[in-house]
Length: 316
Image (cartoon, rainbow, N blue to C red; front, side, top):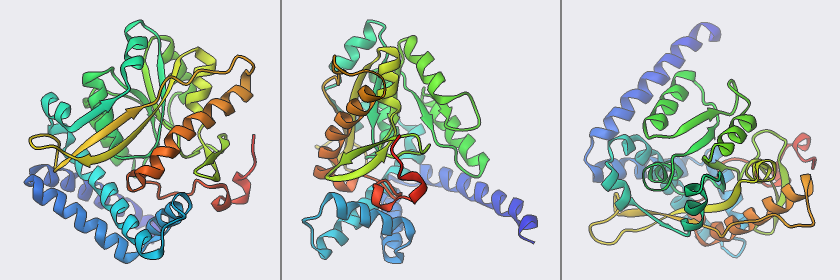
């Protein structure tokens, strides 16, 4: 029976998602944000698997918090997470001027210099704030984005997200079911592309083990490995929400994007050793911002080694 119902369930999921996408774009801004905040609060009250994992991750990076403060942080984190989805639905209707008002970027000048000179740039980013809004801003105000996206189910929903990001000017390579992602990113960097990659979670079981906020974690090695393989300039960027000044922002907030200084390889290291060392330095920058802006870190999955399945705990 389940095999008979699966196509029906999938079709209903796709239809509901598409109706929701359009409806959120039609709603007045305060109503749209209020709806998604209510959805976040309901999810926290329900206390599902993702919320419990978010709480566990926050407890590791903010061990000084008592239970009440941690509860408040989880609520704020889920509100930030749902705000991201609300803005993702509404993003296609934003003008270039609105994007400029919605994003405050700092530290990107060095990356821009490399890109202007035709040198590829890769960037280690986390699941923080609204990285899609940051990507749309980058495509318009810094450099077109080339990146990788995890394939979603149902496939129709993934294709909608792919089309949405492509319409924003991004080039997206699926993590699975398409060209080999590393080869595609390497080729893009050889042609002077800007390649920001969400790397604070290892999706392939081929990542590296690092120290993240005082705990061992497994993250993706893609940005560092690409920098070593191609000579591309490597940066880290953190993204979070801040209260907007009058007349700026979207829904009362701006998205802050902070770039690190260029992270250059040590002369005495090469190969895997260089990749591990560069990745740790990327994580050091990101981890400090996660501690400062914890509710912006939308990590509802396992990332710390102690929480991983035993088969994924090995260190390459």
